[in-house]
Structures are given as structure tokens and as C-alpha cells.
Image (cartoon, rainbow, N blue to C red; front, side, top):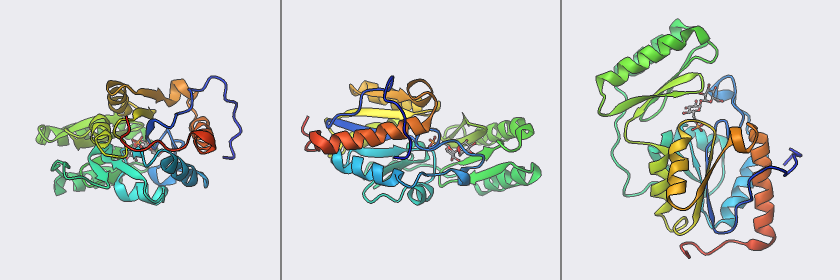
Length: 254
Ligand SMILES: O=P(O)(O)OC[C@H]1O[C@H](O[C@H]2O[C@H](CO)[C@@H](O)[C@H](O)[C@H]2O)[C@H](O)[C@@H](O)[C@@H]1O
């Protein structure tokens, strides 16, 4: 990696018995003015691929982003991804629960919100939508009110989750913790020590799940000084260390 950052004060590197669960925005990449403007460092996909191979496939991206967006940013063969906050796993599994999608009227209302507030954005996903106001801070209250009004129409299916300068309307029964539990049941992950790394409130479910399975969670603000670059450098060192000696541990070997 291009980032030259001292190791002091960083968490211990993951060992060959680990399973890595990594958030995307604010963790692997710096927050940007708009979702389409995030910058993926050119060497990040290869670092993720090396880690995935070294860990026998036990590496997953667990993100609020949509599936196609993540695959576009991180073109890593064999990479497991849990998108839309765990609602959509790829590769999928037979246990995938049916999840609702926002009604067309909500999508139209979201687009009208964005049109009415220059700088605001409506992001549409399969099972949810996001009202972004980072570039239109005065629209924050309107975004919140609209998101709450939508979720109130179908409260058994949807809930509102605050994000960085955005409000997300997403399926009530999807969260990153459930995604971690489902992935840990897969052969490549089973028996490993889960390590979840995130930066945001939605990552707390994933961190809780990791602890529940004798793993650990790291937070970018506290453990990497709020710097995704520090975290990326840590990942690169982990790939070096795993390749140098520890090697992949057979999947499911306890
Ligand atoms: O779970 P994550 O990978 O952290 O994704 C959470 C949401 O991130 C994206 O929005 C946030 O990042 C944007 C790019 O840095 C930023 O412009 C925006 O203000 C943030 O809210 C993404 O657009 C959402 O779909 C994700 O759910």
C-alpha cells in the first residue's frame, strides 16, 4: 500500500484462524461528498483478494451499499459480500429470507425530495432507499420527516436508520449482525474467530455478533484514529503476515 503509517497503537493483526467482516464506507474508503465519488485506492482490491485467499475465503464485505455498486468498486474474484446491511448476500444461500421492497410511490417521493433540494440525493436499492443531504444540509429535517413517513406506512416491514448525512429506509429484519451469523454458518467461515471492522452505528450489530461468537470488533474512530488509510495499511500488513508464514487454516477446522 502507498500509505506509510506506523504500527504503534493499532490492533493485533488477524491470525490464520480469523474470519474478516469489513464495512465499506468510512472503513475501507474515506467518506466522500456523494456515494459515487468515493475513491478506491488501486491496490485495495488486490489486498482484499490476498487476504481472502490467505483466510481460505473467510473474508466478507458487509455494507449498506447495493450489490452491483460494491462489485463495481471492488472487483475481487471470489469475494463474499453482504449488501444492503445484510439483506442481500452474494453468493446467496437457501436461507435467504424474503424481504420487502419500497413501494413505487416511495421511490417517486424520494426523487421529488432530491429534485426539490439541490444537492440532495435519492439512492435506490432493491430493498430500501436512502435520502442523502450531505450537500444540502438544510434538507436534513425534510429527509428525516419523509423517511419516517414512509416507514410509518409499513412499520412491520421497514424502519428508518440515521446514517452519515442521510436517512435510510430499510427492511426491519435485515442487519449486519444477522449477516455475520449467516456467513459464519458457511464452510469457509465456520469455526473461525470473527473480526468485524466498521465505523458507523449500523456496524454495531456486526460487532455485537462477532463478540457473541468469541470474536472481536474494531471501530475506525477509536482503533484506527478515524482514518481508513490506517486501516488499509493494517490490512496490507495482515496480508503480508499471513502469506509469510501462517498460511490459510483449513476451513471449518475449529
Ligand atoms: O455500510 P457502509 O458500507 O458504511 O455504507 C453505509 C452507507 O454508505 C453510503 O453513504 C455514506 O457514504 C457516502 C460516500 O462516502 C456519503 O456521501 C454519504 O453521506 C454517507 O451516508 C451509501 O450511499 C449508502 O447506501 C450506505 O448504506
